[in-house]
Length: 354
Ligand code: KG4
Ligand code: ZN
Image (cartoon, rainbow, N blue to C red):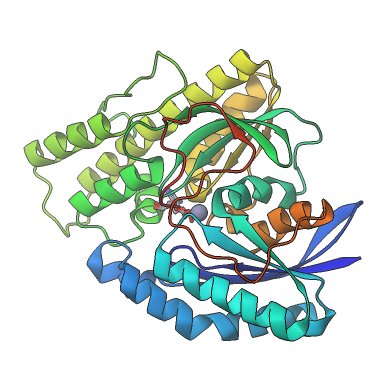
């Protein structure tokens, strides 16, 4: 039995988790996340310096809590897996430095993990994880909108990516235009439940072609519609709910249409949806309903594992650890970091912000 501590601090969530793993399976013993949205709320987005300071403040208590919940002490661990990149430099450095110090003092192994690989690994934390390879994965987060063909735990092929904004970024920008607080995606999701998604027809960019995405045209159309409407910032009205629901519908429609095209093209029968935007209720609903109707196996992890968390980092770390990989104490952080084992589309935006 192997015990792995995961540490995540790439953006605005400080996370620590303990996993108990063996060849038969993975058990999440603890998964602690300290979110910073209260800190960034009034700025309408993540402020790197404030994020870094909050990680510095929270990381040791979060690690302590994760160990306590798992009923373990540091030296009981076999390895520490930490997010190495991509992400905010200061934020990453906090996690990497803490992981190195703990590994040094407890005599445990150290493994640097790519945050995107962590998101892909989050699929395997779910009870309904794909049973076989290959499968198609849609990664939709604040910095990424990518379609992958996943061939093994560590081998992925890029099928499509965004030409401009990521899906989460589009949610954030639309929310900001309406004066909604950060994190905007969560707010739009909530307000959409009260709205009519057919009240406005927004464009579905690049819908009929290929597996790449583009959300900037949708953002511009949304800005124009908003300007022409009678909406006043701060008002709580049916108009606001309808705007949210119609915008959300356009994003989800594009994501499902592209995912289905990828499934057909790759002749796969399983789709996994991961990353913060996979927590969106309408997206989960459409993928489950439409996917099942068309005979696909749909895997959308529990919401806790969609948004940034350390359990997914420990899970990816375990895969590398069990293959004999170890990082040394010169491990550093990278704001841009390509996915290891990635093939295809090197000109696309696959690394960068998380
Ligand atoms: O994966 P994540 O937690 O962090 C990154 O690696 O980026 O994703 C964060 C993104 C944010 O843009 C946030 O607005 C979006 O995920 N998000 C949502 C929802 N929950 C989080 N977007 C739409 N609906 C949600 N329920
Ligand atoms: Zn993320």
